[in-house]
Image (cartoon, rainbow, N blue to C red; front, side, top):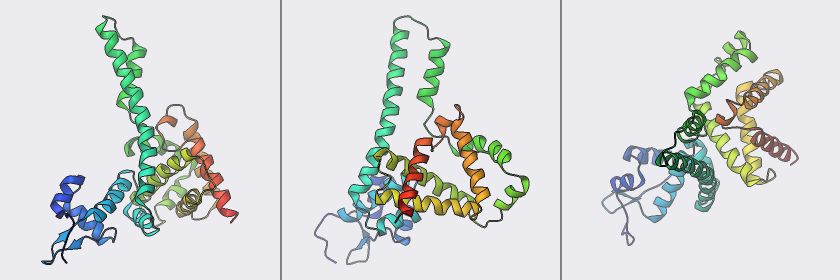
Length: 257
């Protein structure tokens, strides 16, 4: 194939996008991107392929699994739609970073003026400038392990391990769903096709865990409600009552169809 546009080799693309050549091969194997071939058979990437890679990398860094990314791209996910999701997520993060910068600058101004920082000042400085909005996996485990023991019997907990699903994969899927739910909730329309699609996938993930048992579902709901009501844990969770209510409204809208 004669190439009239500028095309980059896998090594050049990997360097420019901050990914590995191995990752590019994986995306190709999963059918997410199809690099072009030179007359000699070498893989190359043009503007269209690199735009596609931007979508893949952006969605992956938002926490979506490759399987979910494949679904989005197969469903005609446009670059602008991915950019819209990125914009909303980055805007929320930008607000947090902006507040952290204000706190740091105020602290430095006080020190420059010869004033000492109080315990409250130092606590705020630490909390707002060193912590992210989300708990990491270890912190999530510390939050939820006691609640799981409180809400579920030993027999029920043992049964969860026999469900036959990959818990690590399920954790990644839930993280991606909650991130997507937060972005859609910020948009504010639970009746939108995107929100209803999210709600269907959300409930499918719930059923994967509960095996359709209403009693287990109620316990899961109680567990999350208790976590969201905890003033220490709530700010660190990827889910809040507003997002939860949004998903419930989206599910109601989906069921009406």
